[in-house]
Amino acid sequence: MKLNFKQYGAGKPIVIMHGMFGMLDNWQYVAKELAEEYMVFLVDLRNHGKSPHSEEFSYALMADDVRKFMEENWLYEAKIVGHSMGGKVAMQLALEEPDMVEQLVVVDIAPKSYRGNHETIIAAMQSLPLGELENRSAAEAHLRKSIHEEGVVQFLLKNLSRERTGGYRWKMNLPVIASHYREILANSLPEEQYEGPTLFIQGLNSHYINPEELSDYQHYFPAAQITPIADAGHWVHAEQPQAFLAALRKFFT
View 1 (cartoon, rainbow, N blue to C red):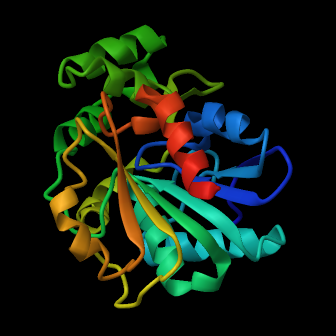
View 2: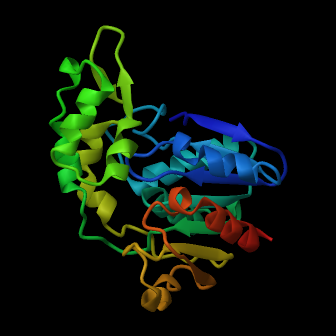
């Protein structure tokens, strides 16, 4: 599994992983800002972006993909950042390969199971008549019938790619992601500990992280701390980029 990636800057390495339905392009602004001080690697996780598709999909596999990516690029220790699903991949990697993780940053996700709230989004994406679409405006109109959050619609539209023969396709492997959705929601972390510096960044308008559960997070990550970002929901890095970057820089230094 050769992961697609982009590299920016020079210095100590940082590896950043996107969330479900995302891709490395979602993190380019953050990467370019951090590249003034660090060597930043953005990766597309399997079944996302331009990375290969596979029928196999789990946190253990995705963490192993990242481990192999790091080894192939001579990154034997790096600062690891992951958002949402990518945050769970980052946690899995830290627990399985602690010597490879200098510092761990988990963005708006916690080491626990979730009930899920993407069913409507998945159904809307599956119902999109990809082969019949004439333009992105038609796709946008179709998605808006079921999805009423403008930011979510625009986020999903970035995943559409025009086919040369007409119509569109999803860059992500939607059938496999949908079939493994319950596994993505579950807490499948190994019963290990990562004792290195760990930061959970919380969007205060989001419900994914609960500061009252910090002791539960410390079961896996004894040194864990939580930094809240005001006026931000689940996509903290996109909604409050400067506050997000300030939190990262403070933690890294």
